[in-house]
Figure (cartoon, one colour):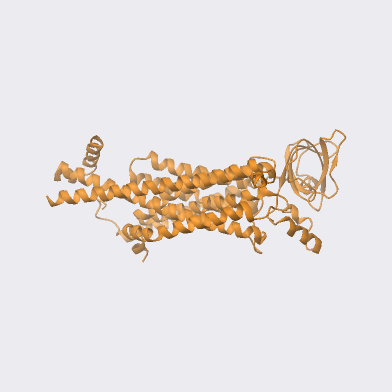
Length: 56
Length: 265
Length: 162
């Protein structure tokens, strides 16, 4: 295990590279999913309330 | 045919069907790819374990480049055919491509220091990649700087097309000029110059990155389309409250309508 | 909808936009190509020993020298820090002197790029040495097997010949 973490002496270069890539991938993914979810819901809600107004 | 597919509602329906699958492919290939890249793949005969940076560096650089190709292609379609979906796709691709370009620069730096002996050099490949990063930033800055959506879309699309000239320069920089960066290992004449024990993990990481890009791009296009829908719905609502006169008066009435909106929110 | 009702039809306008954008891009590509051609000399990151031989470098000018470290040419000076080696492009050779830390990839037969200037004796005095790695990736055992079977192409290991 410690050999794995050591990365043949390149640990200080290999691990930051992987942490940065996976960190950005996860954060960008979550942010994109969340904004899509809330905006789609908001659009549906607005459309519905407007449809109700129309019927009056 | 193209316009059938390019219909925003149809797109959202198609995306909603594909997204669960893309999510599974992304998660699965990342799990397998990372496992192989970090654990089962061998060290390089010259670079030792530092070669493992390649498994995230090369796909990041590719996504940065591919994201720009999508951005430029969609900008072209948006300029010529004025299609809202193309416009949304171009805008959605920019942050993803920018993120990967930044990651390619960062991981390349972390690889270059131990191997080349330097974090950074101004050779043709590294410099053209930095230019790509700035093109993305400029594109996004234009979108946020110009308030009128149509004007912003046009200006950003023109910038995207002008910058597209950088794409072949990045690809061929290592062949055209002497650079510190090595030439291509995979997409080259005579087949890849990489052992299969390394080619497999790299290939799986490429699948993971591409599936991830497609997935996030769809999410962002959906978000963009929804945001536009909200904008028109709010405008219509405001216009109706103002009465029919406001609707016919054009831009001035529109601005008024928006002012009402902002007060209300 | 556009306010102007007169003028060309939408389909014609689209075609005109298409032609206009395509021709603008063609002109731009041409211009970029010309600029790159003009810049060609500045975009070259390093010179080869043959370029020195051809007299492309005026004496005393700082430049980058690239090539392969010749086999059996690396020697360490008595102070233990200064090293000397020969850079070759397989046609011409240039001796190099360097004092400082070398990158991990530096070894004989490997590509390097040194920055510095020529002294009076024709030795390149380097202020920095960068290692260039090639596009080949393989596990150590495979490299060993290739060497044993004689399929190893010596010299190509250092990357491109300039």
